[in-house]
Length: 118
Image (tube, rainbow, N blue to C red; front, side, top):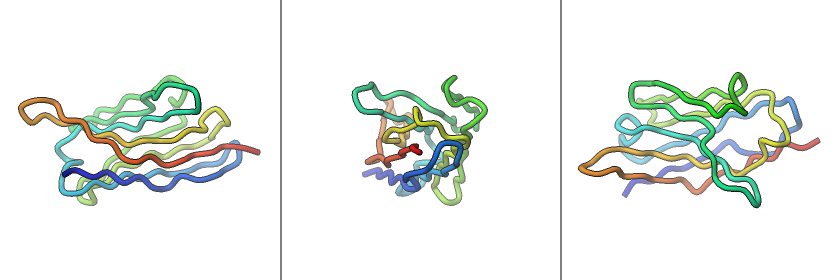
Protein backbone atom coordinates (compact mmCIF):
# COMPACT_ATOMS: atom_id res chain seq x y z
CA UNK A 1 0.00 0.00 0.00
CA UNK A 2 1.45 3.35 -1.07
CA UNK A 3 1.32 6.10 1.52
CA UNK A 4 2.01 9.78 0.92
CA UNK A 5 2.50 12.11 3.87
CA UNK A 6 2.51 15.88 3.42
CA UNK A 7 4.04 18.31 5.87
CA UNK A 8 5.16 21.91 6.08
CA UNK A 9 1.85 23.74 5.97
CA UNK A 10 0.97 26.53 8.34
CA UNK A 11 -0.11 30.12 8.80
CA UNK A 12 1.98 32.82 7.14
CA UNK A 13 1.59 36.45 6.20
CA UNK A 14 1.33 37.66 2.61
CA UNK A 15 4.72 37.80 0.93
CA UNK A 16 6.23 35.08 3.09
CA UNK A 17 7.39 31.61 2.05
CA UNK A 18 6.65 28.01 2.93
CA UNK A 19 8.13 24.73 1.78
CA UNK A 20 5.87 21.69 1.61
CA UNK A 21 7.20 18.15 1.66
CA UNK A 22 5.59 14.94 0.50
CA UNK A 23 7.28 11.75 1.63
CA UNK A 24 6.27 8.42 0.18
CA UNK A 25 6.53 4.89 1.41
CA UNK A 26 8.87 2.76 -0.65
CA UNK A 27 10.40 4.01 -3.88
CA UNK A 28 7.18 5.26 -5.45
CA UNK A 29 8.54 8.78 -5.98
CA UNK A 30 11.19 7.70 -8.49
CA UNK A 31 8.70 5.69 -10.56
CA UNK A 32 5.85 8.20 -10.55
CA UNK A 33 4.76 11.47 -12.00
CA UNK A 34 4.20 13.67 -8.97
CA UNK A 35 1.87 16.57 -8.46
CA UNK A 36 0.78 19.12 -5.89
CA UNK A 37 -2.88 20.04 -5.91
CA UNK A 38 -4.87 22.40 -3.75
CA UNK A 39 -8.48 22.84 -2.76
CA UNK A 40 -9.88 25.99 -1.26
CA UNK A 41 -13.26 26.02 0.55
CA UNK A 42 -16.10 25.85 -1.94
CA UNK A 43 -13.79 25.31 -4.89
CA UNK A 44 -12.69 22.34 -6.94
CA UNK A 45 -9.31 20.73 -6.44
CA UNK A 46 -6.81 22.18 -8.89
CA UNK A 47 -3.34 21.27 -10.08
CA UNK A 48 -0.69 23.62 -8.73
CA UNK A 49 2.52 22.03 -9.99
CA UNK A 50 3.68 18.72 -11.42
CA UNK A 51 6.97 17.00 -12.09
CA UNK A 52 7.38 13.94 -14.28
CA UNK A 53 9.73 11.02 -13.80
CA UNK A 54 12.08 12.78 -16.22
CA UNK A 55 11.90 16.03 -14.19
CA UNK A 56 9.76 17.96 -16.64
CA UNK A 57 7.73 20.52 -14.67
CA UNK A 58 4.37 22.21 -15.14
CA UNK A 59 2.82 25.05 -13.16
CA UNK A 60 -0.57 26.64 -12.90
CA UNK A 61 -0.51 30.16 -14.31
CA UNK A 62 -1.44 31.56 -10.90
CA UNK A 63 1.80 30.27 -9.31
CA UNK A 64 4.32 30.58 -12.15
CA UNK A 65 7.41 32.42 -11.00
CA UNK A 66 6.50 31.98 -7.32
CA UNK A 67 6.36 28.22 -6.72
CA UNK A 68 8.97 25.57 -7.49
CA UNK A 69 8.41 21.82 -7.47
CA UNK A 70 11.34 19.46 -7.02
CA UNK A 71 12.03 15.86 -6.11
CA UNK A 72 14.68 13.96 -4.19
CA UNK A 73 14.38 10.32 -5.15
CA UNK A 74 16.98 9.29 -2.58
CA UNK A 75 14.71 10.66 0.16
CA UNK A 76 11.46 9.51 -1.52
CA UNK A 77 10.31 13.11 -1.19
CA UNK A 78 8.78 15.78 -3.40
CA UNK A 79 8.88 19.44 -2.39
CA UNK A 80 6.89 22.53 -3.19
CA UNK A 81 8.72 25.76 -2.44
CA UNK A 82 6.14 28.54 -2.24
CA UNK A 83 7.36 32.13 -2.31
CA UNK A 84 5.59 35.46 -2.30
CA UNK A 85 2.48 33.84 -0.90
CA UNK A 86 -0.87 35.53 -1.41
CA UNK A 87 -4.17 35.19 0.47
CA UNK A 88 -5.61 33.43 -2.58
CA UNK A 89 -3.04 30.64 -2.09
CA UNK A 90 -4.92 29.63 1.05
CA UNK A 91 -6.07 26.03 0.64
CA UNK A 92 -5.45 22.45 1.63
CA UNK A 93 -2.52 21.19 -0.42
CA UNK A 94 -2.44 17.57 -1.52
CA UNK A 95 0.35 15.44 -2.91
CA UNK A 96 -0.40 13.02 -5.73
CA UNK A 97 1.59 10.18 -7.23
CA UNK A 98 0.62 8.67 -10.57
CA UNK A 99 2.33 5.71 -12.11
CA UNK A 100 1.83 2.99 -14.70
CA UNK A 101 1.48 -0.60 -13.62
CA UNK A 102 -0.53 -2.20 -16.38
CA UNK A 103 -3.00 0.63 -15.85
CA UNK A 104 -2.64 4.04 -14.25
CA UNK A 105 -2.57 4.10 -10.48
CA UNK A 106 -3.10 7.32 -8.51
CA UNK A 107 -2.34 7.90 -4.84
CA UNK A 108 -3.17 10.86 -2.59
CA UNK A 109 -1.88 12.18 0.67
CA UNK A 110 -4.10 13.46 3.47
CA UNK A 111 -3.37 17.11 2.76
CA UNK A 112 -1.76 19.95 4.64
CA UNK A 113 -3.38 23.31 5.35
CA UNK A 114 -1.75 26.50 4.08
CA UNK A 115 -3.25 29.76 5.29
CA UNK A 116 -2.01 33.14 4.08
CA UNK A 117 -3.41 35.97 6.11
CA UNK A 118 -2.36 39.27 7.58
